[in-house]
Image (cartoon, rainbow, N blue to C red):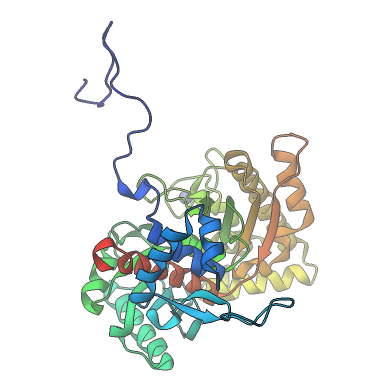
Amino acid sequence: MSPDTGFHALEDGEAQIGCGPLIQSYESTPRSLRMQVFDRVRAAGLISRADLAKDLGVSPASVTSVVSELIETGMVHEVATPKREGESNRGRPPVALGVRPEAGYVAGLKLSDHRHAAIITDFAGNTIAEAEIRHGVLQQETEMVIRDVVRLLDDALGQAGLTQTDLSAIGLGLPGVVDSATGQVMWSPLMREQGIALGPTLEELLGRPVRVDNDANLVTLAELWFGAGRARSDFAVVTIEHGVGMGVVINHRLYRGAMGLGLEIGHTKVQLDGALCRCGQRGCLEAYVADYALVREATTALNWGNRGVQSQHILLESLYDHAKAGNQSARAIFKRAGRYLALGLANIVNLFDPALILLSGERMRYDYLYAEEVLAAMRDMTLETNRPAPVVEIRAWGDQVWARGAAALALDTATEIALRPEAV
Ligand SMILES: [Zn+2]
């Protein structure tokens, strides 16, 4: 065994011990039957015990026993369903199972460069309240960010008629590089300091479990839990906001990479020695497609040298207005960004073969970014296989959807805590 690499080179005649993947973490093993039953009930909305057993491929007896446990702990309840046509009126009314909404509440929060949004949902995923605060500050002190989070959370809770102690978990998303396993924000355009243990700090302050993730993962979770991704096993989401982000679902699960830091599509290189990116490197996709890249181009092409004090948001809107009004320089800037986006999308198709790519974010109102010629350029750069290209859909969604993804993250966390073997 080499101490440097851990690689074990077999000597001549030495037999390998065992074969097959060595799964060490319970996380990668199948979910317990209790989890599977609960997940299935929540996904179905209402489902009978018989259908549950059929869907999960287990005996009705084992479903019945797990369901009894879940009913006893108040996670699931029985709901009388109306009789279907042709069903006899005799016998007991048909009963379906559903998640008991008041089994718990969670909060989802999304921080962004101009607006923070929050949502409160019950355990069945129904929205109870929404709140938002506007601000316009990048690179805030950590203390200020935490103060905003508490203010936003209290606002949303007030509207829901709940208090912090009613929350089973809190999900929080923000742009940047986030290690979701530890709640560390390695880097975010919203925070001045780097490597901040935001999750643990908030957990201590609020006394509730807090999960932190990057905003692209949240919008992917929103699609997986509430949107077009529910019925897809494999899909990708590309977000164009302050930066360019990406989330990938593989086999109905969010893919997080070995250290939770993967899928930084915005920093994959599309040009050697290309445009300077805010990460400090050159030629990143983001340096051609993100807001700051468009504003940087506009500053030169449209002679905006004297508009330095205006916010990026206003400058971008102004660029879009110019393009709509027929300004050729403004149009050329969007077109160029669209070509680079096509290149990034083609790379995603060649790497992941997703059935669906969702382009999401407030900026997707800028139709030049997803014009037919952009999608055609994407198809031109993917491998020719005579099979249809993946479906590309546009989501010009606002911050509340991202907050919903944060609520999904919180629901996932709350469910895992509630269904731990020792908790039931
Ligand atoms: Zn970069």
